[in-house]
Amino acid sequence: MIRSSRTWQAVAMTAVAGLALSACGTTDTDGGGGGGDAAAEDCNFKIGVMGALSGANASIVLPSVDGAKLALAQWENEDCDVELVEFDTEGDPAKATPVATQIAGDETFIGVMGGAFSGETRATKGIFDDAGVTMVSQSATATDLTQDDPAAVFHRLVPYDDYQGAAIAKYLADEVGATKVFVVDNSEAYGEPLADRVEETLGDKVVQRDKTEVGQTDFAPTISKMESAAPDAVFYGGYISEAAPLLKQMRDAGIDAPFVGGDGLFGADFGNAVGPAGDGAVVMCPCAPIDEESTFAADYEAEFGGAPGAYAAEGFDAMSVFLAALDDGARTREDMESFVDSYSAEGLSKEIAFDENGDVPQESVSYWAYKNEDGVLVPEVEVAP
Image (tube, rainbow, N blue to C red; front, side):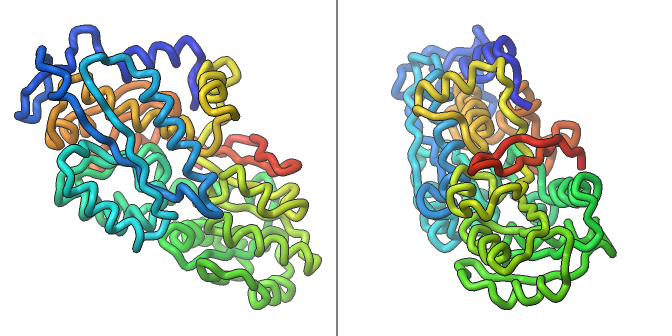
C-alpha cells in the first residue's frame, strides 16, 4: 500500500538517492557494483519504457510513466545522467517486438520499465533476456510470464493473475452475492487466463462463458447469450476499448446485472468511455488507494497537474529500483540484473523484493475493488485473494 509521508521520504532517501556511502562514479564492471570516483560520463544511461502511450487504453499506462518521471526528477545524483526514453507500442505485441530489438541492440539502455501489458511482455521478454536487459514491469499480470515461462531478466511489481482471479471471484461471491455469473474474456494474453481463473474459482456459480475479440465493437452475439442466461453478475477480462461498448450494449438491452472487470479497466478513461452506462461498474486492481498523508499525490499533482492514476506508484517504484542500482555502482547490464535480483526495500506501493521468478512476495499482495461513480473510480473495499 502507499506509505505515509514520513515513510515516503525515507524511501526516497534510501531507495532512490542510495546509501550515503555508495558513490555513483565507479567503473567496476564485474557485476558486483560498488563505489568509485569516475567521471559522470561513466554513468550516462538510458532507461526505456514501453506500453500503450496512446489510444483507448493509454490511461492504464501513462500515469505509471509519469510516476517514473517523478522519481527521476527527484533523484539526487550529480554524477549520473539518466534519460527515460518512451516507446509507444499501443500495447500491441507486434509493435513492441521491434522496440525491444532496438533497446536490446543499444548498449546505452541499461534497463526497461515494462512491458505494461501482458501480451507485449510475453512477446519481448525473450529478446530482453538474450540481451541481458533487466525488465521491471509496473502492471503486466499474466500468470505464465513468471510461472510457466520465466525469463531471468523479468521482474514485476504486481502479483500475477492467479491471485487477481481469486480476488475477483471472492468479491463476486462475498460482496455481490452472485450465484449466476456470466464470464467473458477478450481472447487475449491478459484477459483469457484471468477469466479462466475467475471461472475456476467460482465453479458452479458460473452460468456461462463467452469470448470476444480485441477490436470488436458489436457484441450482439454475447448480449443474446446474456439475455438467455439471465446472470446476476457479469465479469469481463480485457481492456477498456472493448469493455466500454460491451457494457453500453448490455445496458441498452436492459441487462442490469452488476459488471466487474480486472485491472485492465483501471484507467481514468474507463468512466469517460462508458459514460452513464458505467455507473456502479467495479474494477479490481492490485493497487491500494494512495494514503492521504503521503506527499506523493501532492508531488505528482504539482508536477503533472492532476492526481495520480493507474499504477503511478508502481511506475515510481520501478524507476526507483533502477536508480538505486546506479547509486550502488551498477555500470553494466550484468550489474543491473545482479542488483535488481537481490533488491529488497520498502517502496511506495509495497515492500519490494523479487523471488526467483521475478515476482513480489505473496505477503505483499493486496487487491482493491474500485466502483465507478460519476466517471471516477472510487475505492470501495479491500479484497484478500
